[in-house]
Length: 364
Figure 1 (tube, rainbow, N blue to C red):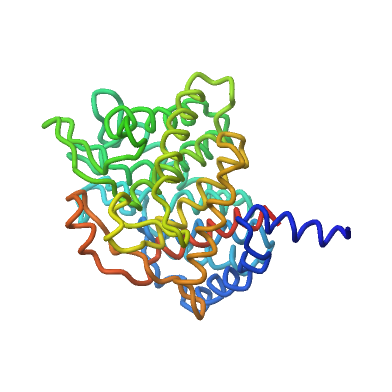
Figure 2 (tube, rainbow, N blue to C red):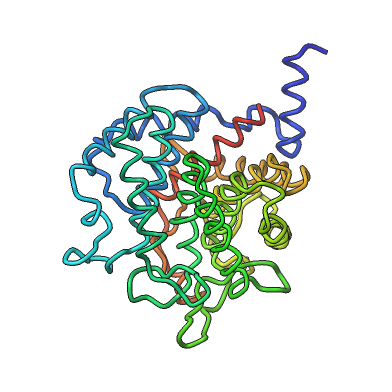
């Protein structure tokens, strides 16, 4: 058998029996290329845009196409003319709440940009925002991060805003305390928000009221799984929290697997098949499951499950360079709220799709 035939057969097996063409590389490039036609300064310095630019850096990493990194650099350059305090919405600029965690994830994209371009003007703001997360952000008594200053709630969203930044920067500059803090955030949230029966995560826990939001939000579980994947990449197997994170990931992955639709998608309320299918959650699961399997945290049996999700998103929600089917921004108000959010093309959905594609590309 020729090497190319072996490769195609292997890809087919890993993607759950679908033909190798089901990997949809043409869609992956088309989505990134369409973004290039929108001026980079159009995009805000916020959580969704941060995820989108992380996705652009992931496709740059896999393809070597400098246009994608150029685009992220243009976006970063536009916003880094501002002081970091302004970017973090610290007083007196506090439209979203001072210290809002949605303004941390853009620093992860800028850090990834530094890794390829090696420019101090990109490392510096990433370090400054990480320093705020470590020493200036709202913290619960057990160290869990609040969503903004004065907010006394753990939201699963906060994990992805903080953990990839802290863990990757910690790897880069030799700060074990950064990596350990990222790992501890997941442990703290799992203690409060992971359902012991299903392994799935609720959206929010209030540490003043000791109350928790109801229902299992799809994208929220995606934030957790991606945070696990990126943090465990930086966490050595001998480090104290590695086994704890592995157990959390295994429990959550089992719960996610059990609720996948027959066509490969997941729903916005994970255990409600009557709620709509949601593309950003599905892409996040594809990325997280594939990366955790690649790292040896999860068994390889999760690879075809992720492959089915990737194929479904491409077949149903990707056309003409756009990813649709992503729900609007969501608050921790429970199932009726999640079901009522509109769907469309969202920055976080596009970013999650590009990230998922980067892990699919590694299979080939």
